[in-house]
Image (cartoon, rainbow, N blue to C red; front, side, top):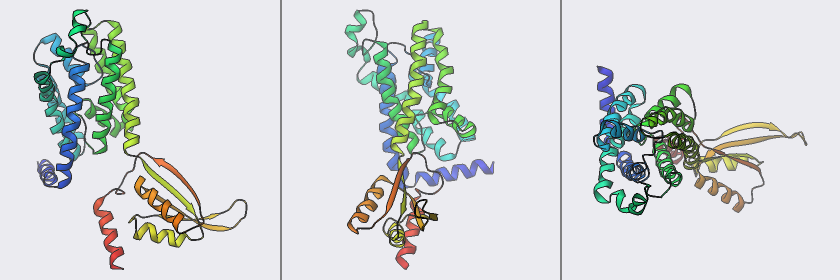
Length: 319
């Protein structure tokens, strides 16, 4: 009981921060895009991708009822799992995103029904906004993957399948994209109840592509630079990193394979802006150095912690 109370208090404290309200806007816009993707590209053709929305379309066609209601009910069940198995911040954010997905789907239906766009296709017997399920698939995957990657970057999700994917990612250590594909493939198979074999195959392919695109967008959004520098002016570079960029760095003693001379190599992890700044500074200062750089898509620990950077800056200022 005390553990539940602690999680509730942590959630309440988080709501009071500026970070939450900033991310609330991001989450709302992301979910509007997700709802539009579901309503305009899945509902008309009954294309079932491995998502909770896809499962909801199957259930609404079999048992009847409102699509938004099915989405909300399934997400409520999965949210309970999120609070139990995943950290409180992820679960708390997902409460919001999951609960508004269903109403936002109904919102698009009320504002501009898909029939208004696909009227000509309905007449020809092809209930599809794009006129072809493959084009619907491409449009849906592109919009959903971008929205999912954006949510993951702020430790949230679009709800539903993302919860299952996060659980698989946390306990089995698969990539997020692979986790989405595994959980989604099972849901795709439920399409046999309402679709023919061809449509089920299209859904499975779409789920696989979605996983690949999520990994691409996630790597792009979270991209950082790992910079390694070998220079005789390593002390000046170290001070610039600490005092100007307010980052930490690691120093190694290395030996040149050709000359046999001992040198110091600095290794630092930077954002893209910081990476550009230090290269510009080294060029202005005419510092001779041998540098290599690589992309890093995931960072764990407190590297991006605002509090830690602020504390480091205060220490430097006191000096």
